[in-house]
Length: 227
Image 1 (spheres, rainbow, N blue to C red):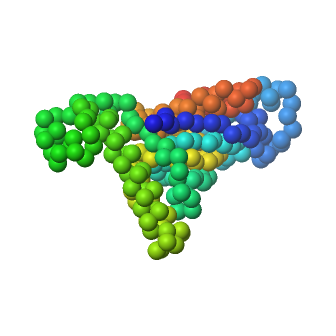
Image 2 (cartoon, rainbow, N blue to C red):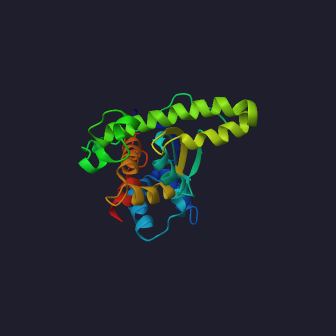
Image 3 (spheres, rainbow, N blue to C red):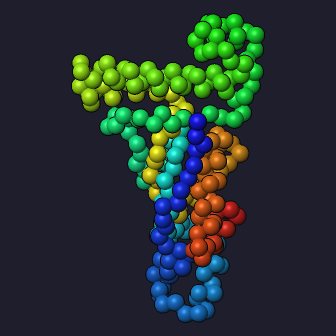
């Protein structure tokens, strides 16, 4: 079992770059007076819906995530995303995620259903059931891939065998946002209404950006929070 995790690969731009993009309409020359007004300008731009300059800042992450959160990431179409593919490679590591709040005891009705002890071993909570179910899916995935390869060919075998992979299987994704799209992502995914796992990923991303040396997006992040 692995936790979802986020790594910041890099970034481009800053509040100053974003401000200069906005000032292109008049003059990009940066005097000390204009530098002192960057924070005020950033807040004014964002609060008034002038969001295009924020596309000049970029943040780049590497994310280890289960499939459910990966789908949440994919729905942000103005981000750039590439990820591991079970169509092109065999997922040999069998990484998976187990939610901690799944440690709930099975009811008597559940214990009686379909002979749980025979299918998944003796389990008293759903956390254990999910883990055994996941391991079973992984075993079937590898065995199916092995059996199908000589008949269907390696390519089609990988495409078909991956259906045994469970929704909590983890893959690695390369995700890049401009700061405008990052703000939209945070609004939707760092929300009390978002699923816990994707909210946790959003919070990790935000913390990593806040901790960039020199805090280059200090005013942008503050503006996003205040709108």
